[in-house]
Image (tube, rainbow over all chains, first blue to last red; front, top):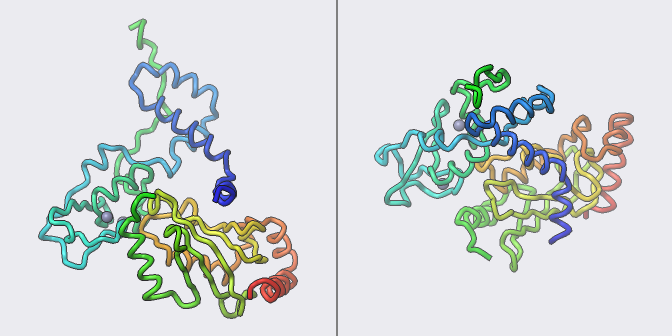
Length: 152
Length: 149
Ligand SMILES: [Zn+2]
Ligand SMILES: [Zn+2]
């Protein structure tokens, strides 16, 4: 089996890129104290690449977004309705925890879709960008304020 | 090995009880995540009348991660390399957990019906395909007769 795995994972490059992407994203997401790092990075990495690294589709949704997905009432679920991720009927569970995605209203078990959305922004059924209705935070114009930090 | 998720059991049952025309998928007795697959070459394609062996493996993260699929039978196709690896979007960036083994295998079958030399995995094959399509199709037919029995 190991050769099989090796053959299927020949793209070591994309792994290291993913690491880099994650690291940069973490830096951007940390609090204001990393502004200096951010600026340093901005100088080291071409703007086009920063954008690519940050907007890569495979990055997931924020946890707050997943937590805030609207719940579907048990009485709105029909007997044959099933989650397309685990393929189980919602009503097989006595306390189904079903959510719907904004825009497309596709439904899933919260437990199932949460795992997917933690690494993707697309609806499993229609590939709608589930975050597309949210205002995008434009980090490409983040500038170092003159009076920030220790001089402030 | 951890117990098999219900979804995999359901999918396996349906593959047997309601098989896709031209496709078979049998789980290995020792590893229910490993499937031996056959796909019949689509009619009116250079792969017509060939039967291709593939292997399909469901990684631990399935369905959050796509199945791993590859051809075991040698095939002359611009989107399949000599190791049998397949260039197909649903197996990579366009995977979705709502897709299933059967939909993936249908996509592979569709790829046999319509090779796409402009998005190649096997570059030399794709070049042949673009340079002289008739000759490439003839070669694909020849390989089908030779290897896909
Ligand atoms: Zn589910
Ligand atoms: Zn949707």
